[in-house]
Image (tube, rainbow, N blue to C red; front, top):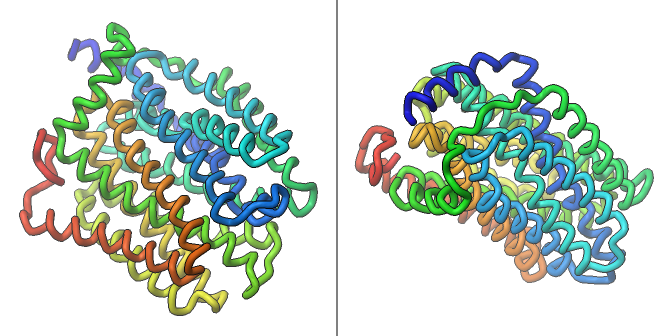
Length: 410
């Protein structure tokens, strides 16, 4: 089995080209964008459905829950079956769900379809371990960083795109155009995505899912990195969910288009993903994690104190997006070395924790905004960053090298 897996990996790696890397990054970006079209539109959605900010924030929570379910139950299938049909099926499902949500007449239906959109958007994470499998030895960090740059750009530009389209054509048009983008992406993938062999074709769905849980339980590295990821994504979703309410509120009175344009300030995070990927290939993953956690704290403190000033608001967004990506890329560069033959399952357990953090952050943002506004949300965001630093320092005390062995921290 090991020899066959090694031969398959070598054949797969021969197929990686700059064009294919770009295709994987684009697929990841347009897929994950589906999760974030609604974020800058939350104040408008609340008005349309005559509901409160705390209730409409659950739209984002529903999509994060759907994404977490996809990570838990669909992503591990990337080790069981050929990933091309899995990716293409998810892309066309996302296209159909986006078309349906444009017709939703009440908040409950909007939230249910948001969950389905989240479920289908897991294709973004099926692509990441595929890119790691296809990358040449010693370059997986760079390749993953490139694909993750595409994913981050999808997250950030989704907000800008949604704001501009909503202002010009209305909220429904955002999701209809998104559906068209996904349909076109699916047709391109049918033609251009290589159909690489399944890594564990002899296994069953039950055994794959069971081994996903078993791998997570056996490897403390994976548990620790999942914890870092969860706390960093709490911070990320706290920022972007509360930012929509803040910019639409009495201090700024911004439209969806202007709110969406703030996503462009976070593009710096894409550069951070590339730089972190290169750094982790040079053995700097541990340092990147601690630096990222520290910058989350500093970024939120700066927003708490100076967020009413647009220049400082922009700086805080840039710092926070870069910090979260530093934590995330350093995590992924390490976890893919734990069990290289089970990267989809490893990504499943890690990203499930990651998006549980996203769901928690979205729910907390709506609640905190209702109770304490910008001050409460930035305080909770800073606290999540502080927890990363505390755990990192506790692990740092041991001064053990990064290890892929079970029960060894990293």
